[in-house]
Length: 126
Image (tube, rainbow, N blue to C red; front, side):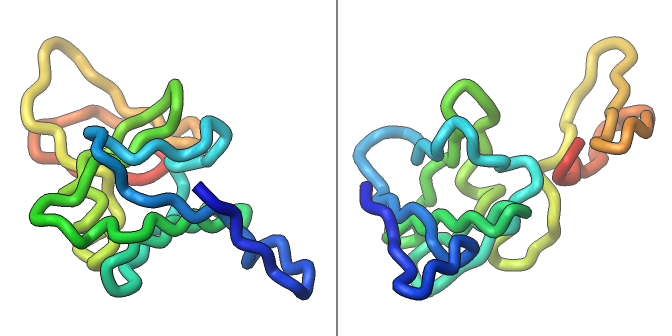
């Protein structure tokens, strides 16, 4: 793991560079705000940009047949195929609800509540 340094002191451009390992998931720092991040593909690399401007580059993320899951220590895990879809512009969503048991509500970051239904996409910030 290495840190990028911007010689001009631009903290928004500076970030963390990770490599895919042999584990099941790529781990991001525990304080990284994954729920509101944007995902971009840069060749075989994944670029994750937080709303604060903090960048994480995962070298070789798309090099394998199946991209690894993306995780935050003590927090969410996003399946590799979902990350790939968001990075490729297939929609700004985390995934879809497949089945539910009982009453399930979804609360967004603004405190708005909506009923969960099968097939509904989960959006960033929910």
